[in-house]
Length: 194
Image (cartoon, rainbow, N blue to C red):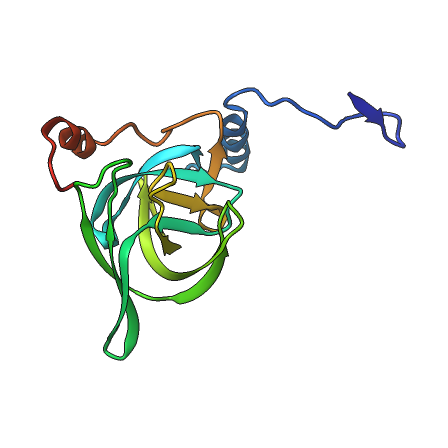
């Protein structure tokens, strides 16, 4: 219900938004402002992305507004020095519940930080910067490296990566595109490289 404010009009404290409400609001805001290309992309709670800097052509991600930092599934994480600067070498299995595809990666270390997982455990993680491509847009984001074998998604996109870029429609999935052909080919032919 609502309550009466001092001017006598009723305020709605709880508004039930029907599916697609956010998308219509963003379009209306940008139409009113005359902006042809909206600043915010609308994405579902799960999407397909690529990480071109790491040579990962397709990975399914969960967009998690409850998580501050983004996380990428990584195994065999090994720090090393290149030209006196800290780098990290690691392997990524981009397919959920799959271990056939192993993509070796290297990236400069931005920092190390303590991150509290959803189970409440604090873990020291390496942080790298990489480009993420979602739909027809791309952005450089910070990603922590951790073993996500027990989790449902190989990558989690946190809210700091979404700021001023994405708006999540939690009732939808794959608004920026269905399963990429490279994944379909992998599943059909049992390839070992995405």
